[in-house]
Amino acid sequence: MVTISKDNQLKNESGKASNELIGSMLTDLQNQFPNDILIQEKYAIGYPGQKEQFKMDYQISFPNLSYERWLIKSTNSIRERIYGVEFFAQNIRNIDKKASNIFVVVPNSISNGEKRNVTNYDSKTKANDYTSFLDGVIFVSTLREKILAHISKNTSQGIKSNILGKDAEVEIVKLLNNVNNRKLWNDYSNYQKTIKSSTFDIYKEILSTAGLTFGKHLISNVVATDSIPKLNIDGQKKGYPKTDVSFKVTSDKGESSHTISVKNTEAKMVTVHEGRVSDLITALQIKVDSELATALRQFEIGGSKKYLEDKYPELLSVMNNQLRKYNNTLTKFFFFGDNSPLVYDPIQIADMILYTKNFSIWTKQDYVEYYNNSYSNCGQFGTPFSWTYPSKKRGKKIQVKGFTNN
Image (tube, rainbow, N blue to C red; front, top):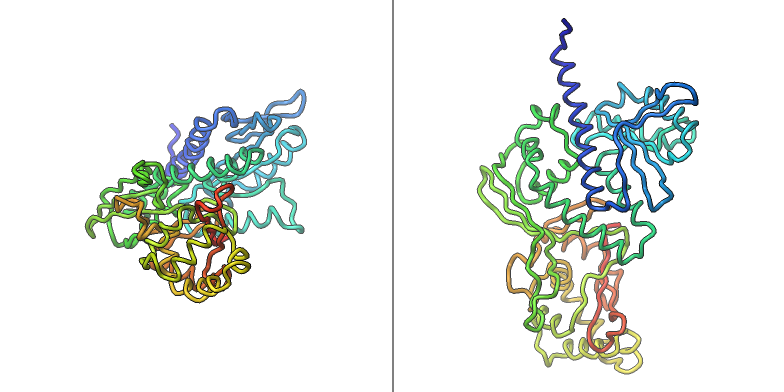
Protein backbone atom coordinates (compact mmCIF):
# COMPACT_ATOMS: atom_id res chain seq x y z
CA MET A 1 0.00 0.00 0.00
CA VAL A 2 1.36 3.41 -1.02
CA THR A 3 1.19 6.08 1.65
CA ILE A 4 1.53 9.79 1.02
CA SER A 5 3.14 12.03 3.61
CA LYS A 6 1.15 14.97 4.91
CA ASP A 7 3.55 17.42 3.27
CA ASN A 8 3.20 15.75 -0.12
CA GLN A 9 -0.56 15.60 0.30
CA LEU A 10 -0.62 19.35 0.95
CA LYS A 11 1.59 19.94 -2.10
CA ASN A 12 -0.78 17.89 -4.23
CA GLU A 13 -3.81 19.76 -2.92
CA SER A 14 -2.03 23.08 -3.42
CA GLY A 15 -1.08 22.22 -6.99
CA LYS A 16 -4.60 21.10 -7.78
CA ALA A 17 -6.04 24.32 -6.31
CA SER A 18 -3.67 26.42 -8.44
CA ASN A 19 -4.63 24.55 -11.59
CA GLU A 20 -8.32 24.91 -10.82
CA LEU A 21 -7.88 28.64 -10.16
CA ILE A 22 -6.41 29.16 -13.62
CA GLY A 23 -9.08 26.95 -15.19
CA SER A 24 -11.86 28.90 -13.51
CA MET A 25 -10.42 32.23 -14.65
CA LEU A 26 -10.03 31.00 -18.24
CA THR A 27 -13.54 29.55 -18.30
CA ASP A 28 -14.98 32.87 -17.09
CA LEU A 29 -13.19 34.69 -19.89
CA GLN A 30 -14.35 32.17 -22.48
CA ASN A 31 -17.94 32.60 -21.28
CA GLN A 32 -17.58 36.39 -21.54
CA PHE A 33 -15.91 36.35 -24.95
CA PRO A 34 -16.98 33.07 -26.65
CA ASN A 35 -16.04 34.32 -30.13
CA ASP A 36 -12.57 35.46 -29.11
CA ILE A 37 -11.14 32.74 -26.87
CA LEU A 38 -11.08 28.95 -26.96
CA ILE A 39 -9.75 27.02 -23.94
CA GLN A 40 -8.44 23.47 -24.00
CA GLU A 41 -7.11 21.53 -21.02
CA LYS A 42 -4.14 19.17 -21.07
CA TYR A 43 -2.20 20.24 -24.15
CA ALA A 44 0.31 17.60 -25.35
CA ILE A 45 2.52 17.26 -28.42
CA GLY A 46 5.43 15.11 -29.64
CA TYR A 47 7.80 14.72 -32.55
CA PRO A 48 6.45 12.89 -35.61
CA GLY A 49 6.10 9.17 -34.93
CA GLN A 50 6.77 9.62 -31.21
CA LYS A 51 4.66 9.91 -28.07
CA GLU A 52 3.09 13.25 -27.11
CA GLN A 53 5.49 13.73 -24.22
CA PHE A 54 5.74 17.55 -24.04
CA LYS A 55 2.80 18.81 -22.02
CA MET A 56 1.21 21.96 -20.67
CA ASP A 57 -1.88 22.42 -18.53
CA TYR A 58 -3.86 24.74 -20.81
CA GLN A 59 -3.99 25.91 -24.40
CA ILE A 60 -5.58 29.28 -25.20
CA SER A 61 -6.54 29.81 -28.85
CA PHE A 62 -7.58 33.14 -30.42
CA PRO A 63 -9.94 32.48 -33.38
CA ASN A 64 -9.90 36.10 -34.54
CA LEU A 65 -6.10 36.18 -34.52
CA SER A 66 -5.41 33.30 -36.93
CA TYR A 67 -5.91 30.76 -34.13
CA GLU A 68 -2.71 31.84 -32.46
CA ARG A 69 -1.95 29.69 -29.37
CA TRP A 70 -0.75 30.50 -25.90
CA LEU A 71 0.31 27.63 -23.61
CA ILE A 72 0.06 27.70 -19.84
CA LYS A 73 1.83 25.71 -17.13
CA SER A 74 0.48 26.02 -13.60
CA THR A 75 2.73 25.76 -10.56
CA ASN A 76 3.13 26.93 -6.97
CA SER A 77 6.90 26.69 -6.79
CA ILE A 78 9.33 28.01 -9.39
CA ARG A 79 12.32 26.28 -7.84
CA GLU A 80 10.87 22.78 -8.05
CA ARG A 81 9.59 22.64 -11.63
CA ILE A 82 10.95 25.47 -13.74
CA TYR A 83 13.77 23.61 -15.50
CA GLY A 84 11.48 20.75 -16.49
CA VAL A 85 9.04 23.29 -17.93
CA GLU A 86 11.88 24.96 -19.82
CA PHE A 87 12.75 21.58 -21.40
CA PHE A 88 9.15 21.05 -22.47
CA ALA A 89 8.90 24.62 -23.81
CA GLN A 90 12.10 24.23 -25.84
CA ASN A 91 10.76 21.14 -27.61
CA ILE A 92 7.26 22.55 -28.07
CA ARG A 93 8.72 25.55 -29.88
CA ASN A 94 10.52 23.18 -32.27
CA ILE A 95 7.28 21.36 -33.08
CA ASP A 96 4.33 23.77 -32.71
CA LYS A 97 4.84 26.96 -34.69
CA LYS A 98 1.40 28.27 -33.69
CA ALA A 99 2.47 28.44 -30.03
CA SER A 100 3.42 32.11 -29.86
CA ASN A 101 3.60 32.42 -26.07
CA ILE A 102 4.39 29.97 -23.28
CA PHE A 103 3.81 31.16 -19.72
CA VAL A 104 4.35 29.65 -16.31
CA VAL A 105 1.50 30.94 -14.16
CA VAL A 106 1.31 31.11 -10.35
CA PRO A 107 -1.44 32.24 -7.94
CA ASN A 108 -1.27 35.80 -6.61
CA SER A 109 -1.73 34.46 -3.09
CA ILE A 110 1.61 32.60 -2.81
CA SER A 111 4.05 33.57 -0.06
CA ASN A 112 6.29 36.62 -0.35
CA GLY A 113 9.31 34.33 -0.71
CA GLU A 114 7.75 32.56 -3.69
CA LYS A 115 6.78 35.93 -5.18
CA ARG A 116 10.44 36.94 -5.11
CA ASN A 117 11.31 33.71 -6.91
CA VAL A 118 8.68 34.49 -9.53
CA THR A 119 9.96 38.03 -10.08
CA ASN A 120 13.58 36.88 -10.27
CA TYR A 121 12.94 34.12 -12.81
CA ASP A 122 10.60 36.28 -14.87
CA SER A 123 13.46 38.77 -15.18
CA LYS A 124 15.72 35.96 -16.39
CA THR A 125 13.30 35.09 -19.21
CA LYS A 126 13.79 38.62 -20.57
CA ALA A 127 17.54 38.95 -19.95
CA ASN A 128 20.02 39.06 -22.83
CA ASP A 129 22.53 36.84 -21.04
CA TYR A 130 20.13 33.99 -20.21
CA THR A 131 18.48 31.53 -22.58
CA SER A 132 14.85 30.80 -21.75
CA PHE A 133 12.12 29.28 -23.90
CA LEU A 134 9.38 30.87 -21.79
CA ASP A 135 7.71 34.22 -22.38
CA GLY A 136 7.40 34.90 -18.69
CA VAL A 137 6.59 33.66 -15.22
CA ILE A 138 3.47 35.59 -14.28
CA PHE A 139 0.59 35.74 -11.83
CA VAL A 140 -2.94 34.62 -12.67
CA SER A 141 -4.17 38.23 -12.64
CA THR A 142 -1.42 39.22 -15.08
CA LEU A 143 -2.38 36.43 -17.46
CA ARG A 144 -5.96 37.62 -17.39
CA GLU A 145 -4.91 41.18 -18.22
CA LYS A 146 -2.72 39.97 -21.08
CA ILE A 147 -5.56 37.94 -22.58
CA LEU A 148 -8.00 40.85 -22.41
CA ALA A 149 -5.48 43.23 -23.96
CA HIS A 150 -4.73 40.69 -26.69
CA ILE A 151 -8.33 40.07 -27.76
CA SER A 152 -9.11 43.79 -27.80
CA LYS A 153 -6.04 45.01 -29.68
CA ASN A 154 -7.79 44.96 -33.06
CA THR A 155 -10.91 46.74 -31.81
CA SER A 156 -11.56 50.48 -31.82
CA GLN A 157 -10.38 52.48 -28.83
CA GLY A 158 -13.96 53.16 -27.72
CA ILE A 159 -14.96 49.50 -27.75
CA LYS A 160 -11.66 48.53 -26.12
CA SER A 161 -12.24 51.00 -23.29
CA ASN A 162 -15.73 49.63 -22.74
CA ILE A 163 -14.49 46.02 -22.66
CA LEU A 164 -11.60 46.64 -20.29
CA GLY A 165 -13.35 49.26 -18.17
CA LYS A 166 -16.54 47.36 -17.41
CA ASP A 167 -14.60 44.14 -16.95
CA ALA A 168 -12.47 45.76 -14.25
CA GLU A 169 -15.54 46.82 -12.30
CA VAL A 170 -17.09 43.36 -12.53
CA GLU A 171 -13.85 41.74 -11.37
CA ILE A 172 -13.55 44.05 -8.36
CA VAL A 173 -17.08 43.12 -7.30
CA LYS A 174 -16.24 39.42 -7.68
CA LEU A 175 -13.00 39.61 -5.73
CA LEU A 176 -14.63 41.53 -2.87
CA ASN A 177 -17.44 38.96 -2.67
CA ASN A 178 -15.01 36.05 -2.95
CA VAL A 179 -15.27 33.84 0.16
CA ASN A 180 -11.77 32.44 -0.38
CA ASN A 181 -10.30 35.93 -0.17
CA ARG A 182 -12.10 36.41 3.13
CA LYS A 183 -10.70 33.13 4.45
CA LEU A 184 -7.16 34.13 3.43
CA TRP A 185 -7.60 37.50 5.16
CA ASN A 186 -8.81 35.94 8.39
CA ASP A 187 -6.31 33.03 8.58
CA TYR A 188 -3.65 33.32 5.89
CA SER A 189 -1.08 30.98 7.43
CA ASN A 190 -3.60 28.15 7.62
CA TYR A 191 -5.41 28.58 4.29
CA GLN A 192 -2.65 29.74 1.91
CA LYS A 193 -1.45 26.16 1.36
CA THR A 194 -4.77 24.93 0.00
CA ILE A 195 -6.66 28.05 -1.12
CA LYS A 196 -5.32 29.88 -4.15
CA SER A 197 -6.46 33.31 -5.28
CA SER A 198 -5.54 35.56 -8.19
CA THR A 199 -7.01 38.61 -6.48
CA PHE A 200 -6.12 38.41 -2.81
CA ASP A 201 -3.47 41.16 -3.02
CA ILE A 202 -6.06 43.58 -4.43
CA TYR A 203 -8.64 42.46 -1.86
CA LYS A 204 -6.14 43.17 0.90
CA GLU A 205 -5.30 46.63 -0.50
CA ILE A 206 -8.95 47.63 -0.82
CA LEU A 207 -9.90 46.56 2.70
CA SER A 208 -6.77 48.14 4.15
CA THR A 209 -7.73 51.42 2.44
CA ALA A 210 -11.18 50.99 3.98
CA GLY A 211 -9.54 51.12 7.41
CA LEU A 212 -9.09 47.45 8.27
CA THR A 213 -5.76 45.90 9.29
CA PHE A 214 -4.65 42.56 7.85
CA GLY A 215 -3.68 40.21 10.68
CA LYS A 216 -5.72 42.18 13.23
CA HIS A 217 -9.34 42.64 12.15
CA LEU A 218 -11.52 39.61 11.36
CA ILE A 219 -14.06 39.96 8.56
CA SER A 220 -17.41 38.20 8.76
CA ASN A 221 -18.90 39.46 5.49
CA VAL A 222 -18.32 41.66 2.46
CA VAL A 223 -21.12 42.52 0.02
CA ALA A 224 -20.14 44.40 -3.15
CA THR A 225 -22.07 45.54 -6.23
CA ASP A 226 -21.57 47.53 -9.41
CA SER A 227 -25.30 48.31 -9.70
CA ILE A 228 -25.12 52.03 -8.98
CA PRO A 229 -28.12 54.26 -9.77
CA LYS A 230 -27.62 56.66 -12.67
CA LEU A 231 -27.51 60.41 -12.18
CA ASN A 232 -30.53 62.67 -12.53
CA ILE A 233 -30.14 64.78 -15.68
CA ASP A 234 -33.13 66.98 -16.46
CA GLY A 235 -35.43 64.56 -14.66
CA GLN A 236 -34.07 61.47 -16.41
CA LYS A 237 -31.82 58.79 -14.93
CA LYS A 238 -29.16 58.59 -17.63
CA GLY A 239 -25.77 59.83 -16.44
CA TYR A 240 -23.05 57.64 -14.96
CA PRO A 241 -21.92 58.58 -11.44
CA LYS A 242 -18.31 58.59 -10.26
CA THR A 243 -18.93 55.49 -8.15
CA ASP A 244 -18.36 52.28 -10.09
CA VAL A 245 -18.38 49.80 -7.19
CA SER A 246 -19.85 50.03 -3.71
CA PHE A 247 -19.35 47.57 -0.87
CA LYS A 248 -20.32 47.01 2.74
CA VAL A 249 -17.93 45.22 5.07
CA THR A 250 -18.79 43.68 8.44
CA SER A 251 -15.93 42.93 10.82
CA ASP A 252 -15.06 42.86 14.49
CA LYS A 253 -14.43 46.59 14.05
CA GLY A 254 -18.06 47.14 13.06
CA GLU A 255 -19.91 47.76 9.81
CA SER A 256 -18.92 50.33 7.19
CA SER A 257 -19.89 51.22 3.61
CA HIS A 258 -17.53 52.40 0.89
CA THR A 259 -17.65 53.51 -2.75
CA ILE A 260 -14.91 53.21 -5.38
CA SER A 261 -14.21 55.03 -8.61
CA VAL A 262 -12.37 52.58 -10.89
CA LYS A 263 -9.89 53.84 -13.50
CA ASN A 264 -8.85 51.12 -15.94
CA THR A 265 -6.66 52.88 -18.48
CA GLU A 266 -3.15 52.92 -19.87
CA ALA A 267 -3.46 56.57 -20.92
CA LYS A 268 -1.67 59.40 -19.15
CA MET A 269 -4.75 61.65 -19.35
CA VAL A 270 -8.46 60.77 -19.39
CA THR A 271 -11.74 62.66 -19.47
CA VAL A 272 -12.84 63.23 -15.87
CA HIS A 273 -15.80 65.50 -16.56
CA GLU A 274 -18.16 66.31 -19.39
CA GLY A 275 -21.20 68.46 -18.73
CA ARG A 276 -22.79 71.86 -18.53
CA VAL A 277 -20.80 74.64 -16.96
CA SER A 278 -23.81 75.48 -14.77
CA ASP A 279 -23.22 72.19 -12.93
CA LEU A 280 -19.62 73.17 -12.28
CA ILE A 281 -20.67 76.59 -11.01
CA THR A 282 -23.03 74.85 -8.58
CA ALA A 283 -20.29 72.45 -7.46
CA LEU A 284 -17.87 75.33 -6.82
CA GLN A 285 -20.57 77.04 -4.74
CA ILE A 286 -19.92 80.44 -6.30
CA LYS A 287 -22.47 83.10 -7.14
CA VAL A 288 -23.95 82.82 -10.62
CA ASP A 289 -23.21 86.51 -11.30
CA SER A 290 -19.61 86.38 -10.02
CA GLU A 291 -16.64 87.13 -12.28
CA LEU A 292 -15.52 83.51 -12.24
CA ALA A 293 -19.00 82.21 -13.13
CA THR A 294 -19.15 84.69 -16.01
CA ALA A 295 -15.72 83.60 -17.22
CA LEU A 296 -16.68 79.91 -17.05
CA ARG A 297 -19.87 80.51 -19.04
CA GLN A 298 -17.90 82.40 -21.68
CA PHE A 299 -15.38 79.57 -21.82
CA GLU A 300 -18.24 77.13 -22.46
CA ILE A 301 -19.36 79.28 -25.40
CA GLY A 302 -15.92 79.46 -26.97
CA GLY A 303 -14.54 76.12 -25.81
CA SER A 304 -10.89 77.13 -25.56
CA LYS A 305 -8.34 79.24 -23.77
CA LYS A 306 -7.47 80.92 -27.06
CA TYR A 307 -11.08 82.05 -27.49
CA LEU A 308 -10.88 83.92 -24.19
CA GLU A 309 -7.43 85.23 -25.01
CA ASP A 310 -8.64 86.69 -28.33
CA LYS A 311 -12.08 88.00 -27.33
CA TYR A 312 -12.22 88.34 -23.55
CA PRO A 313 -8.69 88.78 -22.15
CA GLU A 314 -10.08 90.18 -18.92
CA LEU A 315 -12.05 86.97 -18.35
CA LEU A 316 -8.96 84.90 -19.16
CA SER A 317 -7.22 86.80 -16.37
CA VAL A 318 -10.10 85.91 -14.04
CA MET A 319 -9.77 82.21 -14.95
CA ASN A 320 -5.99 82.28 -14.46
CA ASN A 321 -6.15 84.07 -11.12
CA GLN A 322 -9.26 82.66 -9.48
CA LEU A 323 -9.87 79.10 -10.68
CA ARG A 324 -6.68 77.78 -9.03
CA LYS A 325 -8.12 78.69 -5.63
CA TYR A 326 -10.65 75.90 -6.10
CA ASN A 327 -8.24 73.10 -7.05
CA ASN A 328 -9.22 70.87 -4.13
CA THR A 329 -12.93 71.39 -4.86
CA LEU A 330 -12.38 70.77 -8.57
CA THR A 331 -10.53 67.52 -7.88
CA LYS A 332 -13.28 66.27 -5.55
CA PHE A 333 -15.97 67.16 -8.09
CA PHE A 334 -14.25 65.79 -11.20
CA PHE A 335 -12.95 62.53 -9.68
CA PHE A 336 -15.42 61.77 -6.90
CA GLY A 337 -18.64 63.67 -7.69
CA ASP A 338 -18.67 65.92 -4.60
CA ASN A 339 -21.21 68.78 -4.75
CA SER A 340 -22.66 67.57 -8.05
CA PRO A 341 -26.24 68.83 -8.55
CA LEU A 342 -26.95 65.60 -10.49
CA VAL A 343 -26.39 63.39 -7.45
CA TYR A 344 -29.43 62.32 -5.44
CA ASP A 345 -28.04 59.26 -3.61
CA PRO A 346 -24.85 59.29 -1.48
CA ILE A 347 -23.78 55.99 -3.07
CA GLN A 348 -23.14 57.94 -6.30
CA ILE A 349 -20.27 59.86 -4.67
CA ALA A 350 -17.01 57.89 -4.51
CA ASP A 351 -14.84 57.89 -1.39
CA MET A 352 -11.93 55.90 -2.92
CA ILE A 353 -10.22 55.82 -6.29
CA LEU A 354 -8.56 52.71 -7.73
CA TYR A 355 -6.24 52.47 -10.75
CA THR A 356 -5.94 49.00 -12.24
CA LYS A 357 -3.04 49.23 -14.71
CA ASN A 358 -0.42 50.83 -12.51
CA PHE A 359 -2.25 49.45 -9.49
CA SER A 360 -2.88 51.85 -6.65
CA ILE A 361 -5.78 52.81 -4.42
CA TRP A 362 -6.35 55.97 -2.36
CA THR A 363 -8.90 57.39 -0.02
CA LYS A 364 -10.47 60.60 -1.31
CA GLN A 365 -8.51 62.78 1.10
CA ASP A 366 -5.16 61.17 0.25
CA TYR A 367 -5.82 61.29 -3.49
CA VAL A 368 -6.83 64.95 -3.53
CA GLU A 369 -3.61 65.83 -1.72
CA TYR A 370 -1.48 63.59 -3.97
CA TYR A 371 -3.11 64.81 -7.18
CA ASN A 372 -2.81 68.52 -6.49
CA ASN A 373 0.76 68.22 -5.23
CA SER A 374 1.71 66.25 -8.34
CA TYR A 375 -0.12 68.05 -11.15
CA SER A 376 -1.09 71.61 -10.13
CA ASN A 377 1.51 73.06 -12.49
CA CYS A 378 0.70 70.72 -15.37
CA GLY A 379 -2.74 71.88 -16.50
CA GLN A 380 -4.44 75.08 -17.62
CA PHE A 381 -5.60 78.14 -15.68
CA GLY A 382 -3.39 77.17 -12.74
CA THR A 383 -5.34 73.92 -12.27
CA PRO A 384 -4.22 70.30 -12.62
CA PHE A 385 -6.65 69.84 -15.53
CA SER A 386 -6.89 70.38 -19.27
CA TRP A 387 -10.00 72.29 -20.40
CA THR A 388 -11.81 71.99 -23.75
CA TYR A 389 -15.21 70.98 -25.17
CA PRO A 390 -16.69 67.64 -26.33
CA SER A 391 -16.79 66.93 -30.04
CA LYS A 392 -19.70 68.78 -31.75
CA LYS A 393 -20.87 70.22 -28.42
CA ARG A 394 -19.08 73.56 -28.26
CA GLY A 395 -21.31 76.09 -26.61
CA LYS A 396 -23.32 73.38 -24.85
CA LYS A 397 -20.86 71.55 -22.61
CA ILE A 398 -17.29 71.59 -21.38
CA GLN A 399 -14.88 68.68 -21.24
CA VAL A 400 -12.16 68.37 -18.62
CA LYS A 401 -9.25 65.95 -18.75
CA GLY A 402 -7.18 64.88 -15.77
CA PHE A 403 -3.92 63.05 -15.23
CA THR A 404 -3.72 59.37 -14.29
CA ASN A 405 -0.96 57.63 -12.35
CA ASN A 406 0.52 56.07 -15.52
